[in-house]
Image (cartoon, rainbow, N blue to C red; front, top):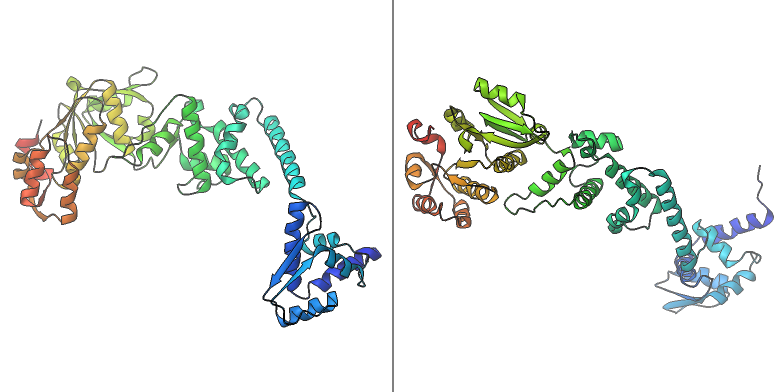
Length: 426
């Protein structure tokens, strides 16, 4: 059953007429923009490159000859008059635009006032919703975090605002816990991949974490030598673990003191049994410091060499490129004033890693078995490419320059596994 009034039906028929030719889309779009600026149906719209069919349509509506013209200017007054003289005379231009675009006309000033009111309502709802939580006082901070997202879509802006608050409230460190990123994401959003690196939500999480660290007076350094460090350490301080399965430290004969001051009984047991142990990041994050035999530790790059040196001293295997777990161990060692002896491969990558670790460590750091003599013992037949040789130019530590000169001279890599047992044992 059709319940349309006579005027509503006439308005529908009128708009159906204007939809028959695309020329009206161009004209009406122009008038809608004018309405947005001035808050009323006014101004002039000029259209160019009009098809023959478009010219015929305009001539029929305005009862005017436009042939031969390259452009046509339609004023609001002209359109209103022509419309009033047509069979749709009781339909206003404002009604035509609203029906044509399916949206009520609104001027910029009115739209701005309406939007500001919506924002006030969202803030009111936010304060009611998050009353009694850490996020309650952070509306302005979250608004600043979302500045780049804009407020064009207030529904999406509100969703992200709520996301910021929920993230802030749920940061695991608040309950002295550490959880994996995927588990945290699933708990907050239902999607374990919501905060994966590269996602918009992942960027917001990182910004919320940075904001929280700033409020706690914690500043995480940006390390050129370890680009991923700042992000990973920031997440860890918030109680969120990234890639914990592969992020571990291989240790031997070390004692760990937990943040509550107690001795870690598991590590104590491994010391007594003289067993090496892989310690994941989630466990390392619970420690306050690491204590070693004679306040010194021997760190090597390769697992096979690590197994070789494990005896009475404290040892660690960095296992190639340092991960956050390895860097965290260095921080814990520095807290107990431990002296570090480090030995790595004598190729460009290995020497560069050694220098980076020395620069990172906040204590006494000695290079061990990284001399020209050691290079003579472990030279391989692997010829270095020019690209790898150029890496040696980054070595600036004077203690490493003699071995750098040797590697440059012979142009081959040296691997610590080839150093004799009697040379490297401790």
